[in-house]
Image (cartoon, rainbow, N blue to C red; front, side, top):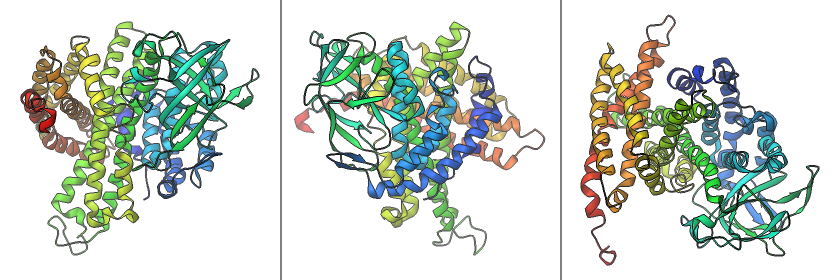
Length: 594
């Protein structure tokens, strides 16, 4: 159950693939030099490996516990969180005017991977705080920013997202939580469910972002407003005042992430919970999307982060476990199951897929970094489109694939993987929530087809395909047999995706695209991941000729990319068939025939 952060692999993507050096030239990101980021990654690796990882199984076994007085996190959690805050890990990408370090999102995302690999349950608390800070920073008044952001950025106060209600899951138009004007604030009444870290004993205060309706609110999602509702009211001098009228009435008993308390929150059992309006009335859902989109990207990082932990454990087990006569082992002492060809297939599938997902998530984050800081308006707009287009792929594809890979990790262990003591099963149980929360895979897929593709006539998609075409040219021109093999599969996959995209955009009946939207998302995720790992191979091939090159490391990058191209990219071609031919049969069976 040990964890060693893959610093070398992460650094390679940042420095050699997505172009951290160019991002560090942008105003405000000057401190993100290769040396500085390298030191951050190394220290994060130490902290996550020594402090967070040992608590992973402890949290799984103990879980968080509820009582009338509050929620108690597992043994060691409070000390670990104190160290987390003291080191400033939660403040990496936040604005410096509120105490943040102002580093690029691509750097903070690289560090977040380590949190989730080491201890996914722990990582969820700062994940939600980061999203809340982002929403407040973009949409709240200066007064609210000054009151709440410094302590949230520091980490001594945490943040939550309150959307779902018992009768309102994905359909937020059905929410009933109310907000009554009361002078300079509002009184909030209602019940919210599935609130991650809605109550805990780690922070001095919890700042809840709550969606609610005003008395005169129009029907539907256009009538939703967003409110800051703190656990403890904050005095004018910044000190904590009395307890607000809110409480956690229970926590859920879950398949996984046992240490992360998933709370049922009750607001206004007495006079009403004091809340403060964020931005304008009836604009709450739009504001909350700022937090949701940040969280969706972070959950995608969770998807491959937990898969990385499962891969490391599976690889270690496969090297140690002796079973049968292997075909790849060269001696009696070299008979670990890692040398069975099919076990090698599983491990190669896990590692190449993780590298593809990591590349895609960091590329997406880098696009948002450039969109925020580049001096050229056209470049900013293009990068914003790129980040928005890739976000549902990072969230949907990476989390679905993360579950698959964690399942493969269990498979490598054989029967022992099904035994809880090995720890392999925990990774699978923990990973299973990621394709569900922060918008299910179907929601990500509909977002990809609708808002991110059809809305702009496919402009963002066409720009992405143009960049892929440039990478294809680099692969084809390279004097390397492996890169040419990658190009062969990549070219066919690109053609299949282009034809499928045209089919999607050409449908007049939204039912047909919706019936196969998830497969479209998975297809585009596989292709985009293939693009990133192909770029990794191009970079590795160029570096091989340099003096002092780490040839074994670079050769491994190239072979992983070839494996991915030959094993995963053919699924893009089959995806085209599924999408264009199975939509009608998917919706043709009546409900009473199911």
